[in-house]
Image (cartoon, rainbow, N blue to C red):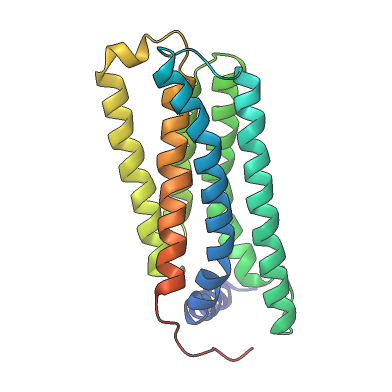
Length: 218
């Protein structure tokens, strides 16, 4: 395929994705709500326990990692199932050209953030930095799709980036928090504020917003 033809094909894919942006937003909302509620539940107990017990950990580092990997798996599986159902309803392939384009933009920041965050927990036992990195890289992953994703997802990406940066500077400036015997409480608070609260707010905003007219299948 020539350079011109490839560019025209990319423009066609982007246009198709932008036309169907409201569909992907509606499909993503149930997964966001599910993941957000699970994140709030998973982060609530460690934060409460740390406040009541002067920073004492409610679980080990590996348990923290396993808990959040399970939540990621549940939310991701639900999102895949909803996307597959929508693709069948519209008689379209699940792995379309649009999905491949979105994955090329989305996967690199997610891969870097996920891998480095796991390394911070396993080798350096720094849960808070791992949580901050996950939130920031997730926000950057959402922003990487800004050219063809719905504006609500772009706003969600900025919310993750801004919240992650503000939380990082608050954590870095507070030596009392950084010197706690365990950073499970601060890490859980970061996860609850970002992956919990922001996802719930996003999902509720989508559910209560007006839906545009249906876009016909290609």
